[in-house]
Length: 389
Ligand SMILES: Cc1ncc(COP(=O)(O)O)c(C=O)c1O
Image (cartoon, rainbow, N blue to C red):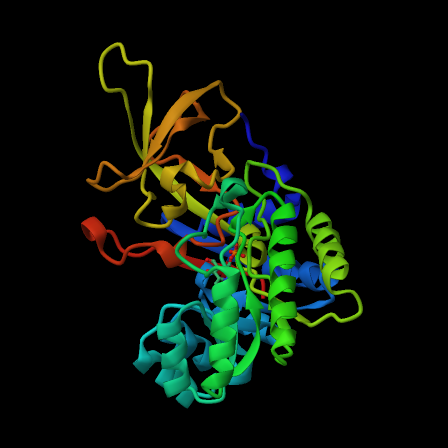
């Protein structure tokens, strides 16, 4: 399959990426902040009924945090380190939600000291820690959801609890003098089936009803992440997600709509980045081997972690793409045999691609730089450069 940059970027955007990329040595990530701004505005336009909490883990660059803060976005943090980063960018603690259900007592203590008052939970241990270290805080309980089969990067199993346990936790929250505030879920990242929100919202409604029987009026639904970026496997456009999700909410909650929030990561920053790599060498494993191995200076350990099990299939643009192409296996630069990005899925690679030629990984703004190892095989973490403002 031949990929045309025009399917992903305007001509101007692509020319700007190429022009800026020429200034730097590979590998690196180049993020266009104007595209981040546009993605945020599109989310606001299509989901006017929701407040956005950017999932900082997708790309924690201060440039992105500051831009989103200036646009009115709030922040979902996974750790005290992300929290400190966000606060150091000038974000007020009232705009922060501590969205990780796995946290140390000392981390909760620090978050509370810094002014954070909104916490996710999915277990009694964590809830009791929050009660001890962050008295009176607002709590939302994360529930288990379906959706693993249709998400390119599933997040089920490890997080969330059964709806009945969510009810128990919300009751316990009241007993512990916390504020039982709402319910959250994550249907899986790069979720291609918008129907998965329908099921999750119905379960949420069941919990809301159970709670109101116990005289607890929950106030918030957190729809999580899962909205798509533009990779090879196509998804519905954002407006379809928005209109369907709105319909599910209205069907279940009608006029009694609680506050809605979302935690977009990929959908906000994915499209804004291009990861630029270079061919280190091209090899065949025997005189008669059909397979051609293309080794790049970027791999699973320095930016391309989401090629794990070939989950995310980035659109790739090679130099010399106008020449004849044949299938290739794409691998990274480290001495680790896991450092192979695509072997089952075969990209079409120009037959004359050679050391020094560049390979551009489009839609690479999310979960790339933040996933890079710090020193594996001595390779430094992936650098990020910015264009736009
Ligand atoms: C709690 C939480 N919220 C939001 C996100 C962002 O998800 P996405 O990038 O699919 O929007 C994640 C991703 O891992 C997450 O763990």
